[in-house]
Length: 350
Ligand code: PLP
Ligand code: COI
Image 1 (cartoon, rainbow, N blue to C red):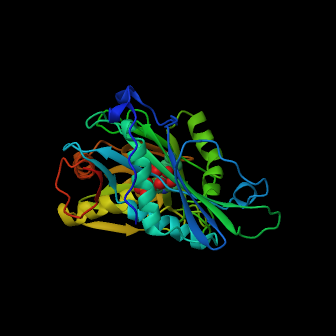
Image 2 (cartoon, protein in one colour; image 1 turned 45 degrees about the vertical axis):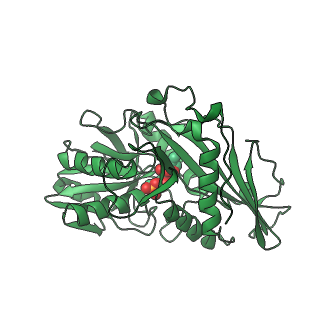
């Protein structure tokens, strides 16, 4: 694999942005990375400037939702180096999705090279350590071509853009930042459908639930399992976590997205803190017995769930110091403020 090329704007200096006050919004950075799959092989276009894509009007991504995306964060560490967090896991999850939607996998080294190149090209937009912001990296995958029939594309585009972001839920994490969620009557994915992959259509299907929740003053929708509407699935674009006595619990379901942050938190809890953990079905009614609740994801990081409002019942949860402990360890590992016993940090710039 070729060494990534280096691009420096401003002589490599940090962009003049108010990093500490960014929201979770798209800010156009100068460069993106692109590769195309045609005639059975991936060809790297490398770093490109145009943020507007020119696609055939018959593209499967546009009509039949043959699309996948990923999300990861790149951060400046306490040591001044620039790190991604477990990017190979994102590559693998994208390829699980590619198999499901019947497209070719993106070679893992191409995926990682793309993350490196696009980060280095946009280095001035990587927020400084301690700003609370991160560079959000958005790889995505589109089936493209001149087509009208319901069948997978022959050609694909793999592109990665980046944008500096602040907290996904306004205010982010903290003992004064409890968020309220509303149980939705809608499903985002079918029981044996696409919920476990990061297919764009799942998110279009979630807009109505999000709109209704926000319209009623809640931060997001909480989904129940689509077969019985009995068990907790996830919260918007974040997985659910609960504390029951000493045990950290999280839902098991085929129709939720297997969160990389959740897997990391469960591993931190189990292996570093020696807490008991359980991944299993959690009935909504079991909220009566939970001592605390939270949700987690790349964009969300970790968020204290202060209240869940159902059709005829609501539950209020206190802030639990164990959320703080998990948050500090996770973010500490991501930003080199703590040791990395699992090898999760991926150094992009030393
Ligand atoms: N659940 C959904 C539906 C998501 O979109 C995301 C975000 O990617 C997550 C959970 C959290 O996953 P991760 O921790 O891999 O970002
Ligand atoms: C993420 O956490 O990376 C997400 O993809 C969440 C959302 C922006 C869809």
